[in-house]
Image 1 (cartoon, rainbow, N blue to C red):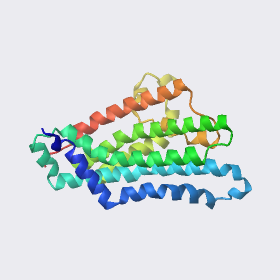
Image 2: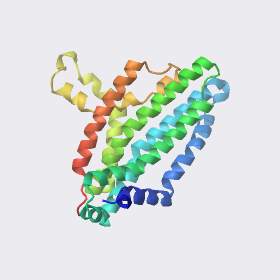
Image 3: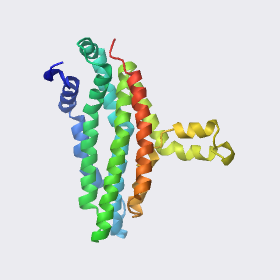
Image 4: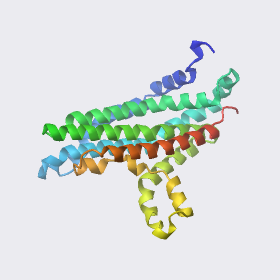
Amino acid sequence: MNGLSRGILFRYAWRGLWQRRACLLYVLFLPVVAWLLPRLTPWEENPPVLAPARVQAVCFYLWGGLLAFFPFQAAVLGRRLHTEGLLEHWRAGGRKPWRLALELAAAVWLWVVAATSAGMLICALFCAPAQPVEAGLWRLLVIQQGGLLLLVSGPLILLAGAVGAAVSELAGTLVAASLVALGLFGIDWLQPLLAPGARGGPLSWLWVALPHYDLADLTSRFLFKLGPLPGAVFAGSAVALGLQGLALVLVSLCLFRAKS
């Protein structure tokens, strides 16, 4: 395999996303959301809440992108490449299916990185407290939030692209969106089912298998100025999310189909 063939799907997919401009508009619209949405509330009664409200708007915007926008982009891209026969063409040329799947997901995930980086800059530069010590803790929390977001987004994008290529763009979007919704909101609803006597049983194993994306949402720590997560807690959350993400990657690679 020569150097020109490396990353051919990534370059093709990236150019397609760039030409459609949807992902670019998503990133460019982020500062607008961060500045306008908080001002629609009666912030004049308590001006200090304006900065946390901007952070909340940024976090909601990014999680909304992971809920629908970016999985949809990956699923549509995977389905289009499969329908046009390009995946089968590159597979016949010696490209490994797992490389094709990763390159497809990487083209979309790079836009997630761009949006997350823009959000982190807004939160760190324009929303930090005035006190130097508090500002330092605030920026550390921003880094933690951005890192956890990027950690969970990659496997979700890969799953949406794989299901989109194998089934349809609607299925790919719904599967990824369902996991995000379950991981953010469904965990709290299902937690009461795990009574102390049920631990170690089937319900306990189900609890472990569910996506725990609530661990990656630190919005409340921004709103109440609780500071960054302790090092051990952050490391534990990252390891748990990383292991779940690895399992999701393996499932996605098994679902990915390059042949028509």
